[in-house]
Amino acid sequence: MRESVIIIFLISLNQIYGQQMELIAGHVLFRHGDRTPITTYPTDPIKETDWPNGFGQLTNTGIEQHYRLGKYLRGRYGSILSLNYTASEIHVRSTDYDRTLMSAQANLAGLYRLYNISDDKIPIQPVPIHTVPTNEDFLLGLNDCPRYEQIEKEVHESDEFKNMNTHYKDFFKQLQIWTGMSNITMLNAWDIADTIYIEQIYNRTPSWANENVQKTLSDINEASFYFLNLNNDSKRIRGGPSIQDIFMNMNNSSRGQTYRKVKMYSAHDTTVSAALAFLGINYPHQPKYASALFLDLYKQNSTYYVKVEYLNVTDSNKAYPYLLNGCPAFECPLETFTAIYQPRFPTSVEVECTKNVPPTPPNNGKNKMLTVILCSIVFGLGILIIGTFGYFYCQRREHDAPLLSTESLSRFA
Ligand SMILES: *[C@@H]1O[C@H](CO)[C@@H](O)[C@H](O)[C@H]1NC(C)=O
Ligand SMILES: *[C@@H]1O[C@H](CO)[C@@H](O)[C@H](O)[C@H]1NC(C)=O
Ligand SMILES: *[C@@H]1O[C@H](CO)[C@@H](O)[C@H](O)[C@H]1NC(C)=O
Ligand SMILES: *[C@@H]1O[C@H](CO)[C@@H](O)[C@H](O)[C@H]1NC(C)=O
Ligand SMILES: *[C@@H]1O[C@H](CO)[C@@H](O)[C@H](O)[C@H]1NC(C)=O
Ligand SMILES: *[C@@H]1O[C@H](CO)[C@@H](O)[C@H](O)[C@H]1NC(C)=O
Ligand SMILES: *[C@@H]1O[C@H](CO)[C@@H](O)[C@H](O)[C@H]1NC(C)=O
Ligand SMILES: *[C@@H]1O[C@H](CO)[C@@H](O)[C@H](O)[C@H]1NC(C)=O
View 1 (cartoon, helix red, strand yellow):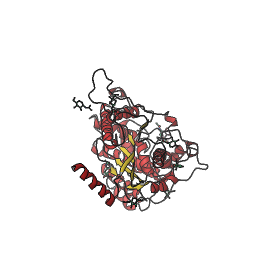
View 2 (tube, helix red, strand yellow):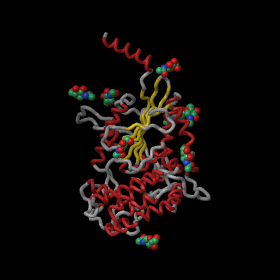
View 3 (tube, helix red, strand yellow):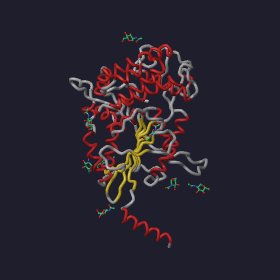
């Protein structure tokens, strides 16, 4: 009796306020979990053999992070996913790396948990994880792509990039003494930043890498992600394919065609940041371990909506919604989303990855954000090594611009 009263009450609420947003399909693109360093520097006393499983491998912490994220996904997508693995409902794609494949496995163990397992039962639900060879992985941003290499080269030859190297010259010189590496530039400082970051997590930091040095390395790293994703071509080539794939599933769903209720993509920091940038979200940061970008499809009163959220902190349950440029609310009508992003989608890999002839000159528009970043970095560096240099630099620097990337081809983490 009481239940029917509540139901009638809810129905009338719906009539007054419109129907509830109903979750129709979920899409999640995440970074792998905590891993060991990918490389090291000559003076590093910690060698590859000192890390469990060697370089570039998911750690137990990373496994736990993804198991936990999988449990979060069960809460998030419980209304659309069966408790038991059902082939028609979900599709999982990973890059062909041990750490992303293992992250997907750990995640799925959290998403499809088993209860009350007896000894004679298999203690997991196996779930297929699809992949393609790295050099063909256009979807997740890793394939061999001459046009993308060309963009990088253009960036490296730009004045802004050279300026950045000049401004860090003294820091890099000092870094060369500390690390025993030669020719450190914006291109390879990231390797050191990443290794030091991990050594700090595992209490193995060398004595020279004090807090100031760590901060400067982290600034360089974060800025590099920002610069990498400024260029429309690089956004489209590296971030466009995954968003397009997600869009096609949403389009199918909204038109009564076959679709997956959940699509999961297991990839790298560079994949996540490029996908964010493609959507218009670019701020200086390196996506954290097991961070996740969500594009969920909702339906209300027969209208479909896309909601973009970013769970940007490891082991957190808080996904921040984003108001996309051109959308009226966090819940963006699929029609509006389509009008904004469809014209920006990549065409075929053949077209996108063919070099421009002649190469396009570096972009020289104005860019306030870059000035701010550059100034704050240089200012921090100034405190560290060259005193007030940064202050004068900021005073001087009126215009800016730049297409800047510090990304080397081999860099995805
Ligand atoms: C729901 O859709 C119907 C039919 O299009 C319309 O009459 C009604 O006003 C809509 N309700 C809300 C809350 O948008
Ligand atoms: C899931 O599969 C197990 C084993 O086949 C079965 O006992 C259980 O009833 C299934 N649960 C659901 C919700 O379908
Ligand atoms: C697991 O077993 C407990 C105790 O027998 C029972 O209460 C619970 O419902 C079971 N859980 C599932 C998911 O079957
Ligand atoms: C460092 O760079 C200079 C100039 O590009 C080059 O001549 C030199 O061979 C490089 N040294 C090493 C060790 O790579
Ligand atoms: C980059 O793409 C955006 C959105 O389509 C557009 O507004 C902007 O003009 C483009 N920038 C350049 C330099 O082409
Ligand atoms: C969306 O789906 C419809 C129906 O399947 C199809 O005709 C249309 O081409 C799709 N739109 C895009 C942009 O793929
Ligand atoms: C979308 O629908 C088309 C036509 O029905 C189908 O070929 C395609 O596989 C569907 N895509 C997904 C992701 O289900
Ligand atoms: C995560 O995103 C929120 C909202 O944009 C922001 O305030 C916060 O600083 C971000 N956290 C990290 C660690 O990037």
